[in-house]
Length: 480
Image (cartoon, one colour):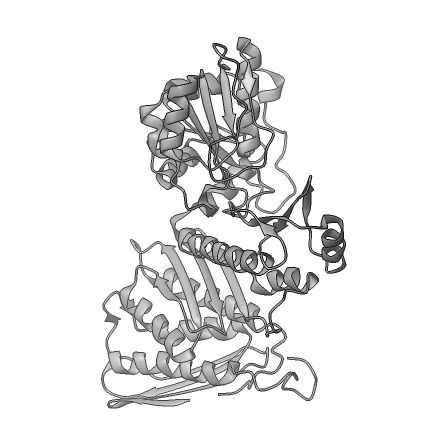
């Protein structure tokens, strides 16, 4: 054992630092999860520190084995044609690197025509593209390496995590030049969280929003300048006066990158940020109040939850907790509340639904609290709702001061997999984490009707309370 492999003499003085006193083990769990996400066997995945690290390994391998490398000096784009310089006749390069969003047909054609020892396709932005991935033809081409990244599609640019995908023999060649402990344990943990199935629903929605925003911004920019096909969370333009455009963007605090006569402009998942970009160039639409959105991520030993709300959009509504009746109840809250709610939870249902139900309510309360922000202009208060013989009354005060009250009993212990005694816990958790007084009273004979009436009434009360009626904070104190 070398000194570099010895553990530290003590644990780090950081939150969540358990186990970081030891050097990282091989990231086998991450490789397995990446294989599921990318649709390949686990032996086709080598986790690396982003696509740039994958390229570095390729260059190391070439240098060690005395191979020549041919790489493009152009911007990434959606097609392979023209992205690399053709080698002289009879002198094909040993390694060809294509910095593009690959298509299987073009990759196969290139591998056949150029016949390099390695054909490397950088697909770091593939999630944002319309073209198919070259990953699907890895098994047909033993010299093909596809690089993927979690930087932009998964929001982990600072963690530096990605993957090289290839047949096992090719990955073994790359791994032979991999430095020890190449992937930090912290990055591995973050990547596993980001790729957890409970996160994928929201990740896919985010990517779809960015793609839609990219098209919207590109259409607006095309009225004043040349816009090239989009390939990621950026728009590439060729304005007549790039320096003037850069100066205008700087005044609005919008970052941009210049490459010759091209400008790379960032696209956000938030429409108001993209509107700022357009406003800097006098291309903004009529100003609109930004949507009130909130997100909560909750990871415990019992549950993994992502919850996102948009109080100013009626949809989408997508709930998956594994407790069918509870999913239905949360759908009622969103439908009657008139807002978008996406919640995904993976919980320890093999023991009991308690943690799943209660922690989901906590995450929903946190997301609602974030979306309400200063609570400026909201109606603040709110609902009585009958459902057959049942009658539910829910009063809300978005005061910022949590105070739960629940009056009502249930004779049936379960409705499906849902424990009826958890209903009071749900509204206590919502009150505490939303920062609101929530008073609930329910009477009736049928526990199904009583429970559903409570959730529907809460949605209706919330709909009234979050409604925007002006710009002032509804309090004589001036703050909630």
